Image 1 (cartoon, rainbow, N blue to C red):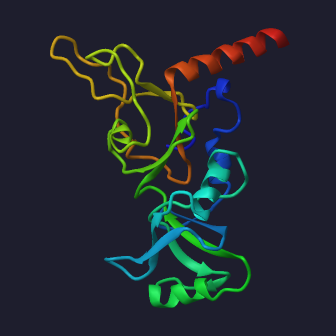
Image 2 (tube, rainbow, N blue to C red):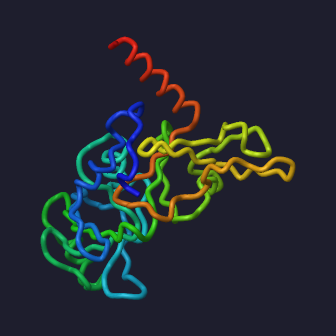
Length: 235
C-alpha cells in the first residue's frame, strides 16, 4: 500500500500518500528516518526496547506537546512528520544515541538547552501500529494491524453506529479517502444474510509513514456532493 491506487479527487489534496512519503528518508530494512522538534516537556514516554538495544517511544500522552505536534501535522496539515508509538530514538539534537539505553538518552533530553528538543526517529514502516484518524471528529487512535476497526469504538476513541444486524445499512461504513476503500466498521452479523465483503480490519500491508484516515459514510457523501457542485459550477 501507499500509492498503488489513484486517490479519489473528491477528497482533495490532503490525502496524498506520495506527499507523506516525501517527508521522510527511506533507508534499508524497510525503515524511515525523520526529525521532529517538540517543545518541552515532550509529553511522551520513552522506554528501552525489551528485545534489542535502543530506546523507543512507548506512549504519547494525550494533550501533551507530542500529541499537539501530531494534531498539527495530521489534522491541521502542517509540514513535517508525526510521532508514532514504536518509533526508535536514534539522535537527540544531532547527537547519535542509536543502540543506547534510556540511561544515556534520558539525560540528553532532560539537560538539553532551549525550550524544545529535536529527536531523530526511525520507524519500521511495514511493521508495528498504524495511526488511524477518524474524520470529521479528528479523533486519533494507534491501532495494531489486522485489528477490527470497531475496536476503536470499544476503547472510546470513535463511536461507530449501525442499525442493522448484517452490516448492510451502511451506517458504519467508513471510506479511506486516500485509496477510496470502504471499510465496514461494525461487528454486525446474522446467519440469515451474509455481511458485505468490505474489509473490517486495519490493513496488514500499510506504510505507517502515512496515516489511515477514515471518513464516515454520511460525511463522505457530503464531500462528494460538494465536489460535484464545484465541478458543475466550473463547467
